[in-house]
Figure: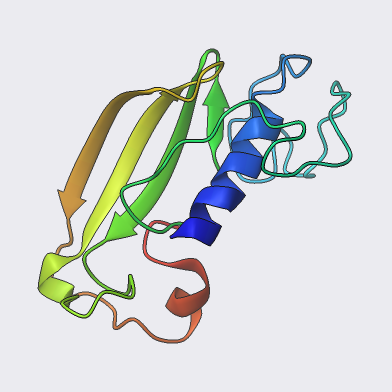
Length: 132
């Protein structure tokens, strides 16, 4: 989970960078190119450099954050395929969180149990997880 939080922190830190005023409404940005043409963001970062905030997630995830106005939406999953010894498809939940863009504070979160049967945690799911 530590690496997932670090990746989220990097992505959200960059998206929350004050000079980036535009929304990021989908995977790879407004037009799908992965370029923020109106941005002048940092080219280096670390746990302390050019990072605006970090927020822990309730589980793993690697989907694209969505930025809309002052809100950032992210997804994650828990209960199955999360490295815990007691994980089970019956415990799988998908999470959607809404964060404040400037602070990373969670304003609301919703968990949804999986509709079983669920795909086994194998193949592509190992790389990207369930909320993709």
